Image (cartoon, rainbow, N blue to C red; front, side):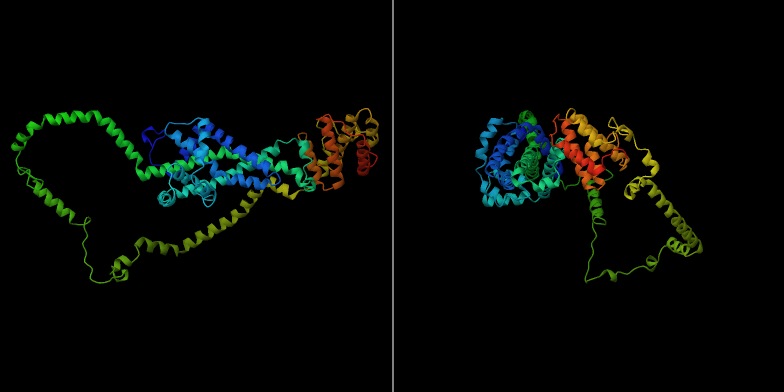
Length: 510
């Protein structure tokens, strides 16, 4: 490895900072990493889904179990890119079969559930160690950063699950509302298992898409933890500093050597003129403080506390045997005075006053709490609307006139008359009459901003199965005609009109 050509700064980092570096590495090469991962994993996923079409769970489990084999390709790309040799997509895909050979069986069996998988993968793939040499290397590496590698795997598992569920929820939210109305629990139970097989494989595909985004990041974080551990063990940062110093001083060293060779003839004369002296000989003898006096003073200071505390102990001694001064065992005067003041009647009066204040504040705090959350409590109490509020029901909703006077005497008969020539107006009349009944008879709190689905939720709260079934049927056919321009079948006229008469009778006005 050419450390001087690394694309990142080689220095010791904390575990979390090292994982941040891995995220930055994956972001720098995200297009190559995600594209290569998708080209390798998606064909395998499609093949497993086709072979195990009747067992979607087994297909997903096999695909998940093969993740260690897929993770070798991102590690190869990151290792090459770290030293300025980023491979192309074609070169990376050509290298993947060769990367699978070393210790693939071990990676897919007893090492598959290791929490340090991404942290230890470079030992096998980059260092090429196996057997006892690998075990010794793993023991040294796991002395530090092993906990961070475990947390990385645990966080990754939860993140994969959260993203997977998020994609499924997004898929459900994007469904049209008229399709959602048919997805009740009774329909799901009555449906055969084969009808929903495609949906299970679709949710499995969401997991494969999640791995395209997350797995390169997971491999990059484990690789950065491995690099950080190697930096600490082998002092890569110090080695780089020494190399820079050698390069900087390379030209200066030659000049120093030449200058030293030129001064060699003068060296004997200088030694002859210099008086004989050594580190222990007296110096500075003409000064007020000679070298010998300074040395004696330094040795005397070092021989006394706090530098040296010699003590000779000839027997076992416990802490209780240490004699204590009677004056030290007595409490200080301020503590004695405080105790006397606490025993006085003044303190008792102050304590009772504080107790009265606290009891007086308790009802006020309860009243303030009830006032603060009055809206939520009102929803739980569920008071029935007063007659005054019932009379204030709106007369127009959704752009429709819902007053009873605007409806015919016999809604069902009027709808039957309109149906042959004007089916849209007939369905609209039934739906408008239903909304009028809900407002004035059942006093439902409908709002102009409510959708058809929210109106059905209000009807469900009435707990009247016949009314709920009729409303669901009428709303579905009204949406198909209003938004999808699909005409209702001919026999629907008699079903809806008979259903109206069974619920409300021949008249429409309350």
